[in-house]
Image (cartoon, rainbow, N blue to C red; front, top):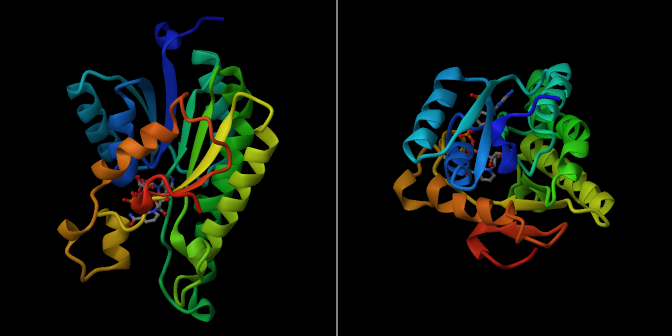
Length: 242
Ligand code: NDP
């Protein structure tokens, strides 16, 4: 089997790498990984690639809609063919949906929340599990939110999806306990991105943490040195476990 010449280093997959926290994390991870950057927006992925190259790193761009389950299965096969393993999977991509009472949520918005925030991550875990186990230190980090554990009016659709993906991640962590794979959860807290601006349109983004502030914790939680499994970490209280 022909393997890529970069197969001696660590390989990371970042979903939602076209902007926001995913972009900052992809750039930070590129110091120690070849980074596979996934999102739908080609222009955004190319801007991330430019930043990675400018910092001396390397990336592979994967323009893909996470609602395309068959494409996610093919992605696992492609990564296997090229690298034979995956060392870090940052399950970051997400949608906010609409902030409204549960009874006003449109079914298509509810379906997208489940498809992007939950089902895609299960489908990726299913596709990537053999690759993560083939790594000497496979690491998975899943993005959550404080509303996953603290229900709040109008946030129900998003909160439901984050509670579900937390359970998915913790179950997978338990299933990986005896392996080299570690699966953890990060709650970044309010971070200045497009999603945050949609949720809090009146907020001055310069008053809250930037994606580049959160990225070092992402890198740390995806490193071989991160031995904890099934931890839920809050960026605002770096080091404190929930
Ligand atoms: P952004 O809206 O800035 O970025 C979301 C990313 O997800 C984009 O790269 C987008 O790419 C990608 N994405 C969305 N839908 C799809 C899809 N169907 N297929 C492929 N990619 C998709 O969000 P943030 O950076 O703020 O959020 C990152 C994560 O952090 C999310 O999981 C979010 O829930 C979580 N979080 C964020 C907080 C914040 O305050 N920012 C607070 C708590 C949690 P594209 O549109 O190009 O496809």
